[in-house]
Image (cartoon, rainbow, N blue to C red; front, top):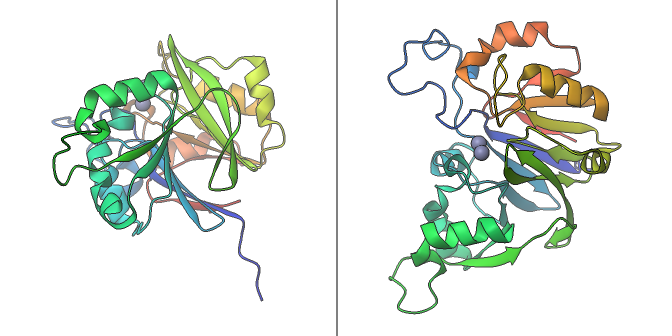
Length: 259
Ligand SMILES: [Zn+2]
Ligand SMILES: [Zn+2]
């Protein structure tokens, strides 16, 4: 019997907060006909040991679950509370109806933000019929498990906002990072695949630009790296990809990789 690969990752969205195309924009990248230049808000599906783990739940969550036929949701891991990473939470309803309370993992500050935005989801009494419920798992900067699968958080800074990246086995996913301390970077030692954010060419106050992302990848030295949380200002997928080192790739929506 052929052994199934251990871990599969699907890039559900690879765009920055507004998505690409940006509404109303005439920028050439927004008008591109290359499907790789169309980017939903950033998220990944990690499939491991029969589990479907989704990182973040932004405004495109419903569409992302539909396009990838995700029929079961075992956990949502939240990186941070910004809208492009959280605002789709209401659309866990079909999973809730089938499976019951959906496990969500987040820093306590992020959980508090979710509780405020989605008070009806977190309500314990007088719940509106049809409102979904979640199983809350507050995480700190220590490894935790999702139904037996070990996940290691990596603490990064998004200007002044704390964000969690996540390592599962030899795959690591970091988005919305601007500063990553040595100690946290050392948790990435030995990864096969590193995903990291690269917003655009010009510097930005809270995101790695391309140069910073490449520098960080060089330091971690994974076998392969993928860039995500991309703005239209980074340029056309094809042109940017052509300039990258051979083991570094621009991710694009619906790309699947195995680790
Ligand atoms: Zn973001
Ligand atoms: Zn953010």
